[in-house]
Image (cartoon, rainbow, N blue to C red; front, side, top):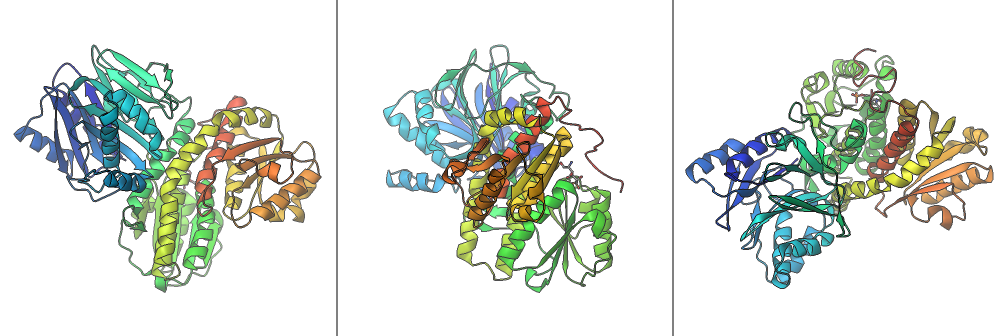
Length: 608
Ligand code: M6R
């Protein structure tokens, strides 16, 4: 993940920026840079590779000035070269950016038609040119930024400084976190509390859609509608430890809200966003063309990520997939062909049953691939190929961001398999990659339903049983919804393939039974709607998670609806995971349960 810092100080800004960037190194990066204002003039130094390269350049050519911005970049749009490194600058401003500007291609074309000359391959440069162009008619940089932000789509955070304005730093947050820090006659900006820990322990976290105008003695906050708002100051513990809840009550809430950023970061690792194709960050010791069968094995939520991926591997790569929970797989003595592929999915990389399954598959001569979040884990070490999820540390026992990052990685691998097996055309790959690029922004959008979800949760918290229904990739998500709800709230919940309803579970439906129906607009949408009708006909209480108007259009009276943005259906499960997670979180919170550490559960299950 890229890292952002900003300093509006009294002393030299450059050493402070480098110091703060060092604390963001853990996020991963491949180039770095800083820009300062020397006597009101913009100056910048950037370097490929690690911070020591930047520090060496700064020794030769020190940057002066008391205001500046800094950045560590993990390449997304364009290679990790000095030219693509941030800050990006024009004669008016310098900008640093974390995340993805989804509509950068359209904006770039518009700007080129207007005479702008682009010097990098990045999406960030469109932001620099858009604000600069705006300043031709609006000389006030604050007004110009306020006018440009609504034109940017996606999940991102930004930091700006302006030529001739040595008491002005602007930050903006849309999907990717950003905090400001308060010093004595100084102000700071950072991707997280950790970056700012050497300078201050007093912070304000920007809320979704916020932007902030900083001077050395003031911070003015604006919301997405450009209305001035107030935001709370708080003390942070980040100086002591990397793991901080930010402005969230629980780690789980923080981890749900981190998803736009970490999914974007993970996708950036697996996609070439310029060529619009999958680019796996590892060599495969086998050819997908020669694989006859894929066996997937995992536990809990990781198993459900695998079950979702089964749909993708079968659809895009025409590769038969067999999937089982690891505790069954390890003992059922499945015949596994030599030279075929076994895939293991695990957040911790230490789950005992998954590890035992891996060892069994290895003993059968299978190629061993794992999707793990902890790269130093045993499962990673014992695999021949490791596909890393870049979700960062997941502290809440309930898996959230690790799950959606697993889905993102699995989607990319399935597309790569489809290309290798020639079952997916280049055009199809391009279309799927374009859909994936939109996911972080859609996930950010989905978090906005939180207040509606919290109201629904208060009612749901009184239930004894809850049923989740879905078809296609929404079926594993229905199972995941039920798993999340039971592990956090201890309410009995079941997930079913909606088409299975009439084969038994429909007997459960009465006026006390809440039925949560996942209805993305995919090829089975109409069928799911029919299943909703069956529930309604028996007096069941329907809660729809789908596009606005889904129940109404079907002539149904739903008890509640969680409205989702309209989206392509291939990877909707990644986006629909968000309301499912938020619902379980809010039910548990309303019931006063221990959200981060539910009873009887451990984060890493290292025993069978
Ligand atoms: O570390 P792993 O991904 O291997 O863990 C697997 C399961 O124990 C885990 O996903 C569990 O189901 C979660 N608590 C669910 O939220």
